[in-house]
Picture 1 (cartoon, rainbow, N blue to C red):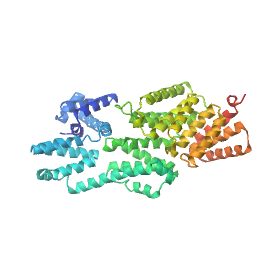
Picture 2 (picture 1 turned 30 degrees about the vertical axis):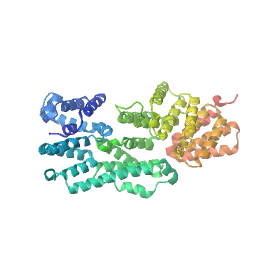
Picture 3 (picture 1 turned 60 degrees about the vertical axis):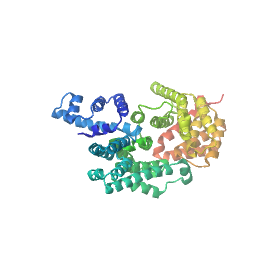
Length: 492
């Protein structure tokens, strides 16, 4: 076999290639689809054969295009890595069968091909397994020695172990329980991930950088908004996109977080057009072409969360134009559809809470504040025995906004007391906490104007003004103050 895409395709099952073909067609990657179709149909032809099959001729200029097409198609194998992360391992049984029947030449040929592809995809677990197989057969061990030997196997074991530790450590350090206990990130943990930035493994580089950034983001570390952090987010995101085919593509949610962190870092400086474009890009980039209707798509949910947060901050107490009204209604329809289809027993309660929290944001923007209140109260009631302190400020900022829009100022005051009791002064997102306080002080001033609440509201405004990253939140509070004095909030 003469080129990498041909070798990779040979490692896939016919069913996987059928799905991959359909995926490429759906993505309008018709030349890549044509290439995969011909490799699937006739897998052992020459490069010239496939070039002519795809482009109709095999000229020198066309060969250049064909080589570019191969490079382009490689990244689309992220679809296979995401959904079938053991697709290379399924070839081991064929090698064992060939060895058993003493078809050593075929076994060696298949083994060399599999090792080459596994190294490209950085499938260290498989490379370790293949080395163990060769050690049981002297001929294989001797023949494959240059590609797979004791020294390389030790390196693969180290890389496999390092990658697993990085993934496990990130999960441990970003768990809601630990964040609530520690409240601040440990510099030693940041240093641990940073030490792997220059690994020989692209997979380890990516996960180490993503873990480091996720730690800064999850703990709201002040350096998250530094220019250097933005550069690291952008670099890591580009690196992940350049090598999207790697087996670590199976950790889709972790790689998706890079898009989230980019928006989180820059969202307060982006225009409406740019933020919508970014969220749409995330949806298009990460959504599954073949997905189970009863499972929550993390990529879609991430983009909706970002868009919901931006919309509620930028458009609460502000008229929406027709285009935005239609977009909000379309998103609400999507939430209704997902809410009815999803098998919630397969979804973690934290994702369930986030789903309805974001849903409630869009309902407020559609003037369905009473339905929004019911959703938030439903979540708080259903999971009152669970721990999700990190999410309380997100839930209560939406709940208080809904009551404010409903002119239920007494309910704003009552629910602020609930919020303080539940959080015990633990603040997950400073901007949420400041907006919650502002809504409470504005409501108190509406009920019975008192000097103490004017002073406290002024203090919140000063805090918001002192942080340029919170300018949109400042504008939100100022709009609520204006609406408090407008005719629609005057008691009659």
